Length: 177
Image (tube, rainbow, N blue to C red; front, side, top):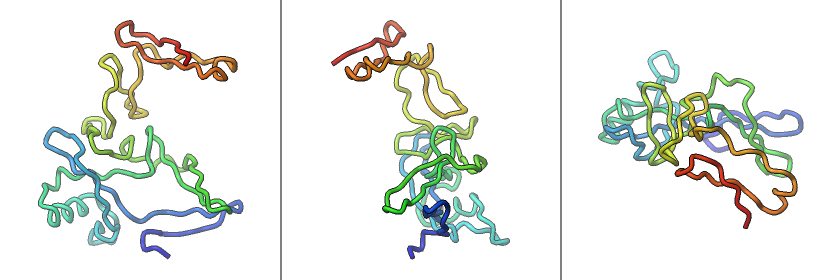
């Protein structure tokens, strides 16, 4: 068994796994994510044997010569403000499902290089796609100022029609290849 697997259990004829590696984003003074490193959970245990982000930050500072306050823990299993788990199916394929325990969701999204750390909202988010778009701090994602693109009909989907954001008109334009 790999050392990064905490536990394996069977549920509804599927194998579920849990990872024991912590992830930390190295951020710049301007809150840009520069890289993401893994850390054994055992390297972030406090004196009581409990995982503690500040212990992980101190460890990373000591071993990477980067200030502790610029290492922010992130969750590989968090996206769009939700926590997900992976299930290994009988055929060894993976299925990703929303976790029953959403208290595990950490900081909006897994940090990626170039993402921004928003200390005020305690989340990571990607690059703003258009100047007019606004950040939804619940989902840690950008949204157009007029909402999502309208639904397409079955015929439009079959014709590979899609909507593209028009920043000048602040509207969704329908396009067909």
